[in-house]
Every structure is written in C-alpha cells, then in structure tokens.
Length: 304
Image 1 (cartoon, rainbow, N blue to C red):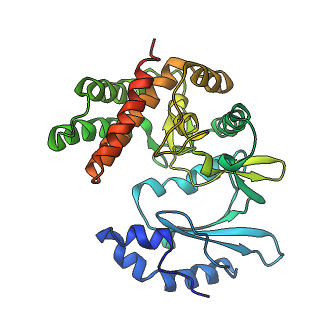
Image 2: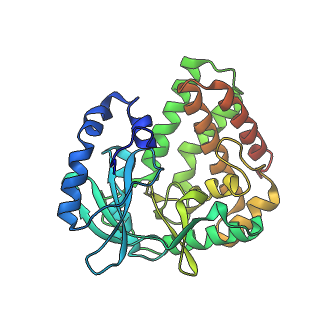
Image 3: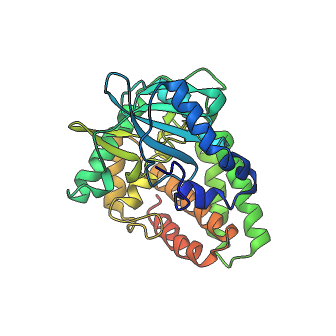
C-alpha cells in the first residue's frame, strides 16, 4: 500500500507551497512515527484534505478511529483546544494528540456521509447543519491564548483585503470592498456574545454519525456566532465555487434556527465572500473572484 500517493490532494496542493515541501518529504516517516505513538495501524489514506494526511484506523479494541497528521500552519493550531472544549458534543471526539508531530487520533464518524450528500430537502439539511453549530456554541471557551480571537483575525483580513484591492486592481466594486473591510473591523466588537466558532462549517465538514451529525476539521476561533453560518448558507444547494443564491428567506431560516440576528448573518456573509473573492484574485483567478463579488452584492441587498 502506498501511504502517500502522488495524486493525494495534500500532495498536489502542498507541493506548490515552498514552506511545506520539507514536511511533505518527511511525511512517510512521520506516518510511521504517529502510528507507533498511537498504537494503531492506518489504512489507505482518505482522498481529501488540502493540508493534512488522513486515514482510517482501529484502536486495539477494534473501535474505529481516524488519524490526522497536519502540515503545521496557523489555521490548524487551535484544532486540539477546540476539540477538547467540545468534548464530543457536536464534533468528533479527540482521542489522542501528539503536539510534537501535529497529529490527532479522532473518533471516526460512522457511516460518515457528508451533509451535502444527504438526499433531503435543502431546508432539512440547513436545519441539521444549524443544529450542529448550536451544540458547538454551548462549549465554554478554553483559556485565553489557546484559540485566536475573531476580532484579531478579522482585522488582519480587513487590512489584507484593502492591500490586495490596491495592489491587484481586479476591477471589483470598490464600494463593496470598502463596506466588507469595514464590517470585518466593526462586527466583532458589537457581538452580544462570544462562542467557540467552528470557522469552516461547510457541508463537507459535517458528517453523519449514528443517527446524528458531527463536525470535523474546524478552523476555530472565539467570537461572534453570526460569523459561522456562511458556508452553510452558500454550500447547501451549491458549492464554494458556485454558491447557492443568497435570499432573505434562507438567511432568515438559518438565523432563526441559530438564534442569531439575520442582519449580522448577512453582513458576515458579505464580508467573508468579498474576502474570498480577493483571495481568489491574489491566487491567479480574478474571474472567479468577480463571480463571487456578485454573490456578495446579493448579500448587500439583504442588509437592513
């Protein structure tokens, strides 16, 4: 069995990242070290994940588990702390953690179907995704310093959006970019409460487990809960590249299910979509970013 096939997404994507090439070169040895540390034998890797190697395994008693070995980077740093805070309530349970190897041994979701693949009406899929977020938000945040603050990250993104717009000149609506950057800076400070955010609650990161659903692969922060629903709004019935059309009914349903303000939900969605558009432009695809700016404009039409 080839542990690290050449067509694995983590290989094809991280091979383009100069900082990750040394980690990729050492990945086969790292897999053996992690398997020995955790006392498990990994199966063939899962064909998914852009920054981590993931494979099924079984504990000595036969319990199904997953090994996740991540390229050390900023977005992955808080995952163990968030999983410990959730303690299996709404997210997979953390079974073991190897900080030195940036590796996790996780509960395996069985049957493990993605929420986006569930053959149920969109309203039911949205409701299921919201139920997972509500469970995650019940957790007490870990001690200060273990997770990044949304306010700090959003302020950085606002500066980056402004810099990319000026440097790249992609032809995007400058007023919409200015509004999005302003929202990134202002929304965190006006939140009524602060929760442990998943950070990437797209329907591919919510899997069936028994008769319910659990989240995987968080990019966690602490902050405004209205930040979290954006991927569900667009990717239930759509994809990141071709999002579902934002509508007042859809935003209202999600906001009502989550107990958050619909206006704030739409504002965060607008800000995050503009940030994604400028990221796309900075990564060589301004045309895709232009399409995503149309989605952001639709959110702007929903603002109070």
